[in-house]
Image 1: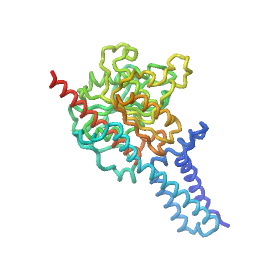
Image 2: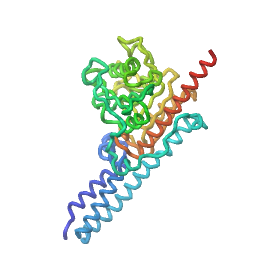
Image 3: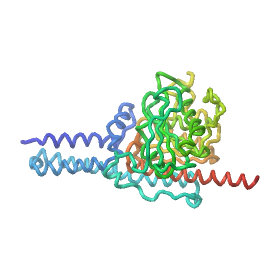
Image 4: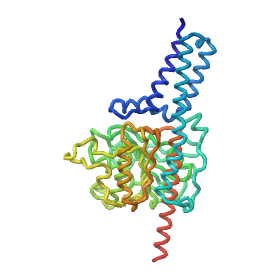
Length: 397
């Protein structure tokens, strides 16, 4: 009996990855990390896996590899894998519903009627289905390696803006993930940065100092330095210093949340205490909400991050977290969102993404494009409310 070895290997590999993308066990820790390692890519770009599986099956059929009993068994197994991939794809496509519900709950009934700028209408399906890895946009310029501090490459940032160099633009400052030990400014959230830049924003993606060279609170101090830099020097790039948002993924979400809760706190601004580090809002993607780097409660710097610095009031927050996250638990994100709502006193949009894994912001996937739509709506609402507040205060004076 002839065994179609190449086809069988293809089906088995795809089956292995599809299992971790769809089932995504979160216990024990080894399985949770395996879910992320083996399943993350297929979880976000399942269409490419579907194309590859169908093409492999068609090739095997054309070469007669499916005529044998082993070939037919492999083809049947491929059908099961295909069904799993369709489920994974469907969960990603329907992420827009979770985001829409989160916006309605967080911003209140009728929020769309209060937004003055156009809201996104259509996801970029051509990119999603065919070129999800293509992150550049023809209308957006990336200015690389701008320095904001004295820590060498760890204090460099990339600036994204339209080629026509907009003026008085809102700015989004983004911090990468990596558990405070790794990561770089050019890896995550690129679809978000380029989308907003194409809409007239200026977006900054910044490196910051990492362990083991530094420890708490040096990462946080660097994050504050970027905000101060944007206010003091951003006019060169068209930044409006009154419209500053922070964002981050994983450990970067930790940094963004801490920035939102510690505006102008001198503990995190040594040497630039008088700089204004307030923000208009914060976007936290698959954040880590635990003790700093696993520290025990009685160790220095072990305060829960960033909620340990929450004092009851916060600028508007947009929080997105996947139910299948193998690194930062969805239960912790859920608790963080409820805590920061403050019983309804604060604006908090919490989008819980069915089937979402850690690192869902790397590609043009259906899930992340739905989140990007949500971020665009959230920031538009926040800027509208900020304008209303300023106008109202001026009228009262």
